[in-house]
Image (cartoon, rainbow over all chains, first blue to last red; front, side, top):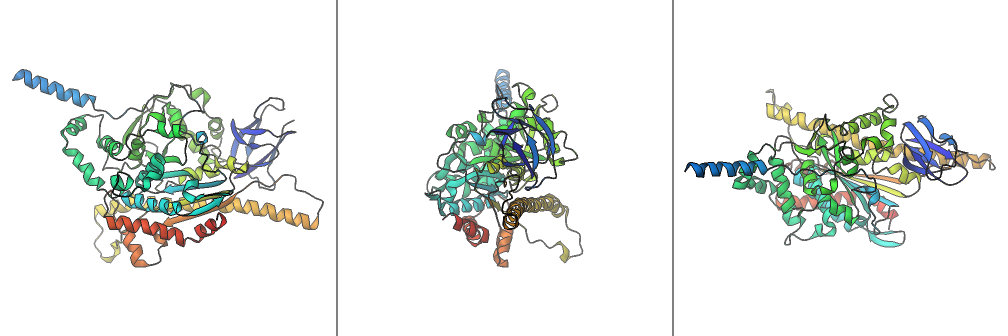
Length: 68
Length: 473
């Protein structure tokens, strides 16, 4: 498994490929490969989405995504 | 006389023409809020924090009896979880099954505790486990009504077997009843897609790209497909209605992403390609299914994929990441036999029949072994990730107390895998007794009793199981 950390100012549901992945500001498990990340609910964040290739991560160094 | 002949011929053609496999109904609209989906179950008696998955292998009545023994043992294992007294069986969230094991899994999902009715009452023991199913199936050939039906090209022996299972064992239960009941366990009956050679699971997520409504499918049909032993039965046919329910424009987001993963994650890429073949009803207007054992004889591939991928219906990573699952237990019940055949005792080459037996069984057994090893490795890797993080954190606190790691620890639950199989029996005579039991839908009462008992004993003797139970008592 790979790890991803999505930061945002508040606690929101993270969507990967349109499906629930977990909560913001937590280290989340994800399958290796291409993914598109967004937040559920209000579109009050930027960028609108983040496309990323998630690979070669560890629990200590997850792939970091920042929404503002 | 001529008129009578014409009338009779007409009647026969009519009977034959009417005979067809049951057409699986169309899905009007693709809707993730409807259908047989794990997330739509709402079983108040079953916590998700203690997440138990059972997988039941193929192996005819041998597999059905062994898995039944496991259900009995779990029912007699008291637990206290989150302050509530219950038994381990009531905490089973998912059962994934193949072939013979699908009868036990399907019956338990459909009728719950009624599966434990004694042999004197109508129930699983009387209607299936202790019954000569093979003999009863064979007797179906003597009903004249079946002669006409079997003469139809659209009705075959597997449809006749389905009708028999539906009437005699599953009492007409359709998936719609499981959907309405919303109770666990979530049932994953597995067959094999004959054209792709891949696993085909009876769940709405698999039926969505075909625009087919699993709710209208009889449970007996899923179980029959799962146990559609090649040659003994012809493949089962499903109708593919793809393109009629607005699924294709709204297909799950992971498919387009996974199509880019050929080099990064080939298995994810392959899953996407397989999935897409169901979306094309021009190329594949019908789907033909065979015994689930061809693709995975343990029923473990589905749960394994759900453990390591967010793309599946079950999606265990999200339940772990959000801290929903605190303990995850997977019990695999493997009724694999290993007839005592020593081909090397003579210089004469083994017969064609024996060669065919080896060709049919050896790759399946090797694949099953590889599947359990992959699951073990996946558990080990997750535990290693958790422990590495914790070790690093404790070193940091020791040498640099003011520092904190930039990201929190991933929430990885306690993970336990219990394998139940005859190869665990230490007594060679006893082991051979089970290894030499036939793959059939007709075993003697004493053989079935032995299988039920050995399942309980194997669980009792499992170090992992005993350790796990201690943590929930």
